[in-house]
Length: 185
Image 1: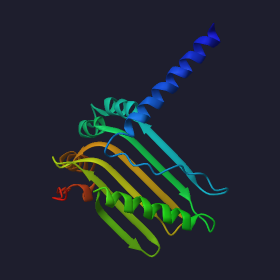
Image 2: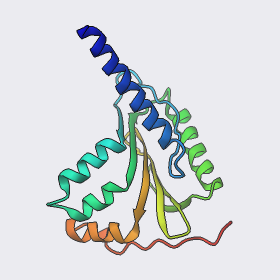
Image 3: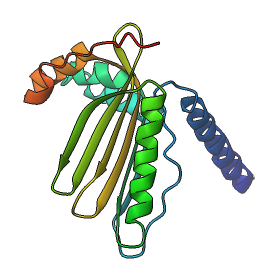
Image 4: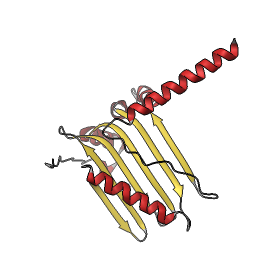
């Protein structure tokens, strides 16, 4: 009976987790980067933070960092992939990164940061809705040190929240965040 209960609980947890992930795929700010695999001997990090864990963090931080808690409460999913590149996978990774960037631009995402310097290549995109709220954020980085980074933050992020958070945490570049909605259709 104990094993049946454990198995049932595990199956229920798996179904709930799968259901929550399936729901985030329908969010306007979600981007599917595809599956990444680890290259032997290279760095590999994959982080998927679901809504329930983010909400928990918001509740825990509410007393000491209310602005951070407010921002976190509206986040639905965070995915971070960092992996090393080498002669075998660098071109393929760069092609995938460029494909993601082109797809985002084609779907109306705004490219808000472009930085290229001595082998580093960074792009940041936001998915905006009509009320000047960010629904998704994507960061892609190919650094000269041989690492590729793909980040997707899904949820409702208001520019004012970022500015308040930056003020409280003394993050200078975010203090004057202004998001303008494009008139593109």
